[in-house]
Length: 220
Image 1 (spheres, rainbow, N blue to C red):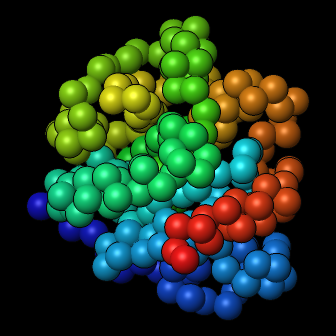
Image 2: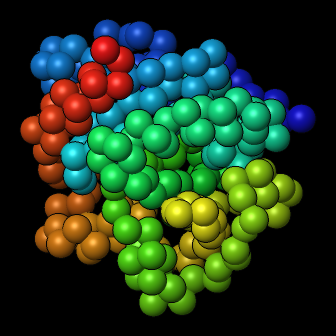
């Protein structure tokens, strides 16, 4: 069984713990006061702070894991329940979700921009994303489902994960991959100029606020 640690230290951890000192609070200055959409004992669903499109959400564990590959052996059934409940709401509001993850192996992973595991959910055609990744000649494995992501093949190593329309793929990063590689691929699909997909360069506050307005319909 994976041994997680208490969620503290990384900025996302501080935000989950309701700290008043985190990047979201400093960036949005109370408008909106929170980006939390829904939470369970183990997971939190939030809006991406620098969304690439309206409907760009993050799903993350409340316990500190570096990747979903590490957490799935401990939380698979809760994750499956969460996603089965979420996807119908998401699809009706934004469109079919593409799930993306840059799984990290350690804080020193040279390709990683991730210090706390999270899945991106975006209303983007996953087939287009996978086609662009394949053009970069990354080694690809097709999975039978999210449960297989938690197998020993992908634990304790970096990876890129995509899930769309019942298809699941894992790719091995190359040394030349950008630190925000998956955001860069989304940028190409969404016709966002290089390097404006970088979360540190363009925040797109209007996208986050529109996202939060739309998800309020999920909880009348």
